[in-house]
Amino acid sequence: MARDLAVIHPDAHCELDFTTPLELLVATVLSAQTTDRTVNTVTPTLFARYPTAAAYAGADRDELETILKPTGFFRAKANSVLGLGRALVERFDGEVPARLEDLVTLPGVGRKTANVVLGNAFGVPGLTVDTHFGRLVRRFGWTAEDDPVKVEAEIAQLIPKKEWTDFSHRVIFHGRRVCHAKKPACGACGLARSCPSFGTGPVDPVLAAKLVKTPAASDTL
Image (cartoon, rainbow, N blue to C red):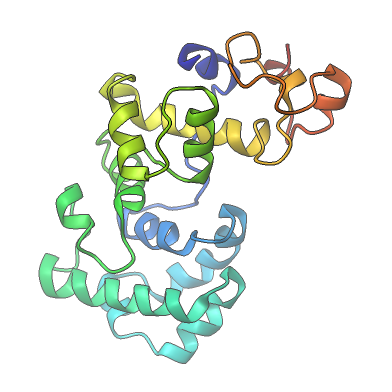
């Protein structure tokens, strides 16, 4: 199934726009409870206004909240970004650390966010256990765990470490495009013959194809 996912989604990648580890860290924190697309509409203004950790640390809260408002939960996110800037300045000389044990000490940063940053900004393999990832590996029958840390540990035993980052992207792509939470496009899924959950959604290819988002030929049987 992992090999098939690589064929189905050869273009899988991080869908948050960024050019530096700091930008990716902030964008990932902002992506909670919203879409990457929404975050990408906000970050050009945000990154131009606050190019460094010190800039975030000294940001005007009202101005920051105004920029972040479209992402939802903007007050809490402003708290995280302000705290993030201060922590980076005070403890890491304004630089984003490249170790998971350091990243998870930062405000608003858990293992999921840390692994996104490690894998995509620093080239350190990591499994990104977001809601899509957790849902799919449970549907695949690879784990029965709900706790993201336990899910990460179990999948780490199944997938070679060098593949962790790319595999995460492929699973998340598949979750966003084909294997939806409420009605997966089973009949248009390239994993159909291997998936123990085949039949959870429509199996008719025509009906299922209508459920596929940004469909490509490789997504169909």
